[in-house]
Length: 93
Image (cartoon, rainbow, N blue to C red; front, side, top):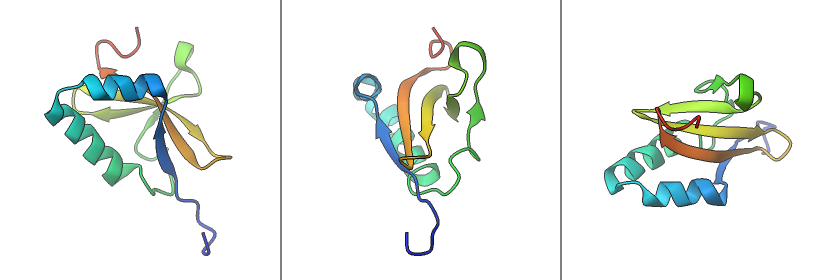
């Protein structure tokens, strides 16, 4: 960070990693590629996401096809913590 710009890294909560591991290989690959392209090393993780409300207030949602990622953006640690991965219809249950 010699230039003073924060570059975020992506980490998975263990339960979210388990869900990722259970996904079909093509879906898992698509999500992994999307994260690498859009989140890993980014300067503004909020640009590609949407702030959630209600029960999930304070968390951010990312859309990858029919799947959603819910993340906790931890500015103090410069981390995007993925806390849930699931299909659009099941993610908020």
